[in-house]
Length: 275
Ligand SMILES: [Zn+2]
Image 1 (cartoon, rainbow, N blue to C red):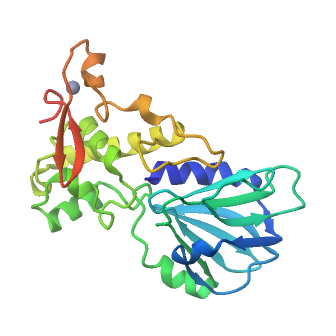
Image 2 (image 1 turned 135 degrees about the vertical axis):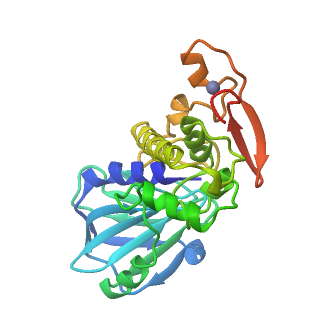
């Protein structure tokens, strides 16, 4: 599933091809499930900026309006020189004036993604309801402490996957954040002290920026970045999908990583580093 680093990667890769004038827009008959709202015909509108908010991509359009795109389980935007021969390509934008990357395709094999084309007014209504982005300055230690104070009885690992509380944190990121912060995944949210929250926030920044640097990480769901490549983030993981704790190995200790299932999701932790 594309998580925050993957969405950020797609944003960063698409940005150099802007502005992108949508001279033609094609929607496959299968987009019905993906396309939630179309306020106007976007032919000859230009994408001038791409932003990310949590796991949403926002395309700012000229002369007005915005596209709001959520990649769901398996969505991606790919740029190419010519139309892709891709059976799961559901939305296609063409800019004929471009020599390079004149085609932008939304690919989504499982079709759980969401696509909105909104006027400025309707976009504002929707944007106001999006959660605080975990990479925004507002998502600080105080914000995390308040969240734990309000919901003190939640096992921390599944709680990190709650998209309302921690938008953009995915399964591998949750295991990695807790490993780097030295917190056992079974601990309760209300039991995590101020110092540990600081470590969690620092770990969150490292995991998010590290994963963005390596263009995201993919384990399932067929995530591809805007160039159609898989991410390479796997080499920076300390516990997730690892046999041995990489933090222990750095200290020349060998500790087997323990895998458990919590809330139906694979959870990895180091019995030495995490308390
Ligand atoms: Zn360890």
